[in-house]
Amino acid sequence: MIQRHKDLLSKLSKETDSSKLGSYGREISTLTSIVDLALERRALLEELETIKQLVASEDEDGEDLFASDTVKIQRDIEDIDDRLTKRILDSDDPDAKLNAILEIRAGTGGEEASLFAGELLKSYEKYVQTKRWKWEVLSSGNKTDLGGIREVSVSISANQSGNYDSDDDSLGVFGNMRYESGVHRVQRVPINDTRIHTSAVSVAILPDNTGALGDETAFSIPPADLKIETMRASGAGGQHVNTTESAVRITHLPTGISASIQDERSQHKNKAKAMKIITARVFSRMKDEENTKHGNLKAEVMGGGDRSERVRTYNFPQDRVTDHRCKFSEHGMENLIEGGLLVNTFLPHMEKLRMEVALKEMTDH
Image 1: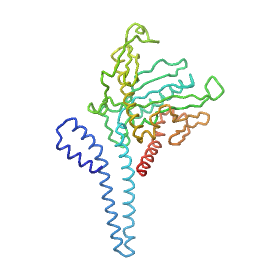
Image 2: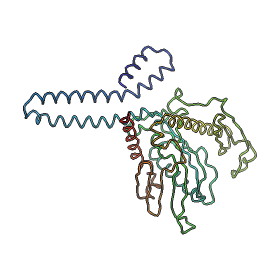
Image 3: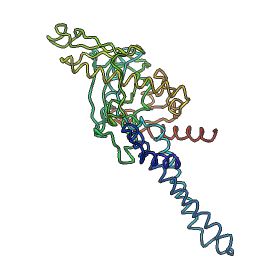
Image 4: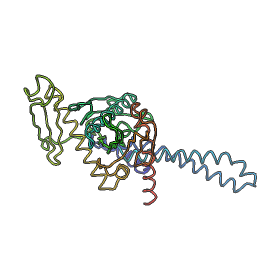
């Protein structure tokens, strides 16, 4: 990586193509923090080797004289190794800094699944509020008779530039929330029954690359690949329903992926929301296929992007939430869900798993 950094700096000084200048600049920015740590580590290793040579040339008291220095340097190297591993992992996953689209769908379990989908939605909104991110509902559909939700799409974004300066926010919206993707299974006794029911809710966290990191890096779909249809809205909603063609459906022809929005009275607003959703869905499909094809780290930790995979179980009778990927369980169901603590509770364990998988891959290769 150090040599790559030098090569890029050399190319940057000679390049005149603006598009390449931007690409080189972004890669240099990513590599600089890694190279700085690597050089710091190299200097510490050289210092440690110097101490060993001094100890070898001294008498027995020489080892005691440099013992404290040796311990400190070794600890500094361990600390740098931890930070270096994390930054290398982050550099291999540029999508981590992106904003995100959250999609929740009620699965098996009928009304109980819809109710739990609503509870998860509120939990994630609470989490987003604590991060001071922007929460925008793109499509919500109609609520069930008991107030549950069948399907919802939400745009979650940080600041406009997409920059994250502090270590805590280095992952960005998608990086923090991506491990929520998958099937969330809930086991509890419904209010109108005495038996334990099992239901499921599907959660998808899609990377939103429609401009969060700047126009030059944004993902866009060629207009020729899209079929845009307008129609009259259906369902509850007042006089404008069934009288104006405000509803919009956009289909990505190469994949068949589609997005339909009718929440707004304005056709233009519905079109903009549908475009945001379908762009995120197509981009996510493309990245998932790429990760699976190349056997990438994300595919192994996330289950290859398969959102039908069960990732977490919420056992209400035992007051326990278990993540089946990192094998970690936490008690205190009410506090975790209503307090918006699900993401922060499991994120460290999933990141640890990700590092363990990465280190194993490095060792194997």
